[in-house]
Image 1 (cartoon, rainbow, N blue to C red):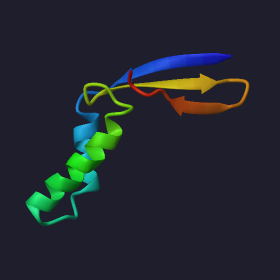
Image 2: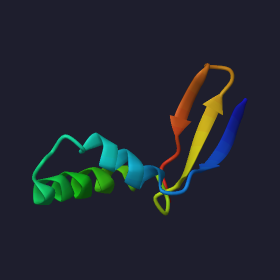
Image 3: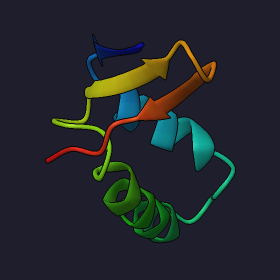
Image 4: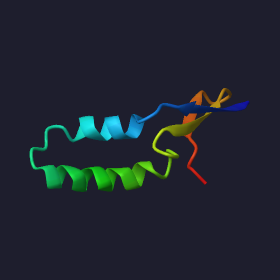
Length: 68
């Protein structure tokens, strides 16, 4: 059986990108990295906070559903 569960966490992507790039001292370089990562993340996260995960109980897997 497959079960899709939507999750919503306001500002999740913004906070995660800030934390992931916190060791980059140069502000412009930090923004460049955040923009690059954001483009990849946007394929799966809608509005920077909504994501849907599909759980397959037969296979015991979980998959992020791409945004359409």
